[in-house]
Length: 163
Image (cartoon, rainbow, N blue to C red; front, side, top):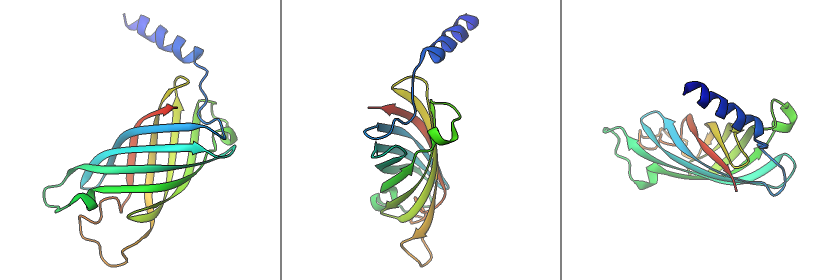
């Protein structure tokens, strides 16, 4: 049975004609888990290709699981960002199903940067991971523990879809 599953997976991968980023007009939707100190949650994002290697989009994260000692209200748990990506999959040429995209984001909590990677198994489905970090925080004074949510290094991991 295990051999059959391996053969089917290899055939699915070899027959897949996926492309991680197709340029202008490309639509990507991503949903996944968000991990950070003292909290974890859900992340959703949408990116739209505006050029051969440029996409714009929105990303939103909501912290679901927060440490008990934090007094975090909705405003502390929620963040939304406008984002710019430089899609470099066709530049690094690892695989046509692979895309790496550094970018910048402008959100409710900070101005930040991210480095993301996607791999598509088929035309419509793949996995992604993103590493996010703030570059400039809006509050220059010391942040409370609840204000540090979304204002620190975070990691997202999940599924990506071509629309």
